[in-house]
Length: 298
Image 1 (tube, rainbow, N blue to C red):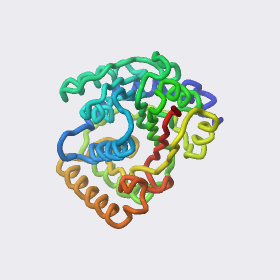
Image 2 (image 1 turned 45 degrees about the vertical axis):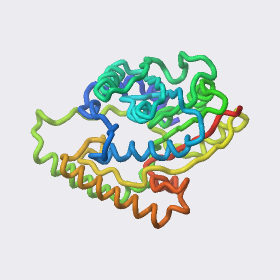
Image 3 (image 1 turned 30 degrees about the vertical axis):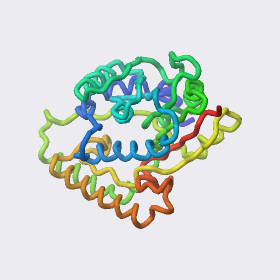
Image 4 (image 1 turned 180 degrees about the horizontal axis):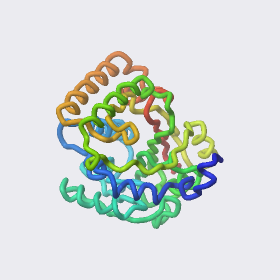
């Protein structure tokens, strides 16, 4: 255990207070990453791309009842809700659940919102067809407990989708750090002190790759285990410490179109070698994140 982990046990088990503070202080909190039409920015493109791959995985599987653990604003669940699933959103932060409720109401999506801890969820065994999380598990030092809890609430034949974002500076982002530094400098020149956002509260994030997750599944009632890297695009932002800070709208629109062209090219050139032929999939070490998926044994 590192010095930082040893001195902050709460951070090491989930960063509850730190997440809540960030949700309350950052304008990014109110971003809505679900969109019905064409994505308008790189984050909407990312969540649309997550959904396309998830939908392919779930093509012939049950997905009526969906639980998103550590939901934040419930961006991925919006896609499930729009597709007809009954969604339950769980988070420890009452602040972000209120924001999620506002977003869902504005999009005419329906869901149940539950304030609870991912380590001890208030659901019976075998409750959901799909259990999904986006950027949750890397914030736990003890990853076994939340994974087993999600297996518990899955129905036999149900699907686990764990999108994990490890602390990995050597992924695709390493080629674009210089560009983000330039953007940060330029943004700082044109931002007054009173409009400067508060610094991001430190949050524990592990560097665990799939090799730390897969042994946990040994001996568990799961089948069809698969792993793939995801998000082979850089995050282009003027705020590297909070990379989901958006650029001005015209720049986001142009960047999104460029990314779409790159993904189209990846599909045409490498589709046969990619996980499920999807251009959003990549080698684990290259991607911004990786996906662990499996089914609960029947």
